[in-house]
Length: 197
Image (cartoon, rainbow, N blue to C red; front, top):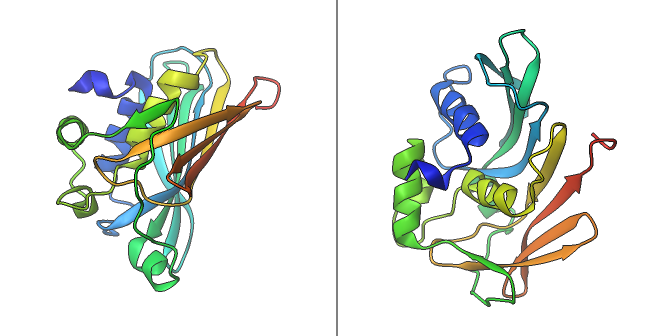
């Protein structure tokens, strides 16, 4: 099951789930935006996690991994959104699957393996209408589109939840990847070159 998660993301995810973020309980929140950066291929020796800023229904969390020389080698920035805020603003609709030529499918049995491997206990990722974790999507996108070069950055903005069993159609144009389920855009991702980072 651990092979489902790219190693650098797995290390940062472990640190993220271990961090209590000021004793705040984020069960039921979803990822609205994520930015993963591979600064170097050095092995992480330590990690630091800090909440950068927060507003009602939103919080920005940042985890940085440092190598033995105390230089940043990876970073993961996540904007969490309270699912109730999304529901109250009417931004959540039921999504139907329309596989395209290039798709990522998120099978319920694979979701169970991912949740077990990552230790994610957020209740929105369980049950008949389970929401696919944003970090799982980001990890799979990194495998597809990441060049694995130093100072590579993928920025993703999640716009609509993807539910277990759904397939996301991927549209890649220039440095942008758009993920859609049916006619609904679920995320947009930018692939940054080293000079852009």
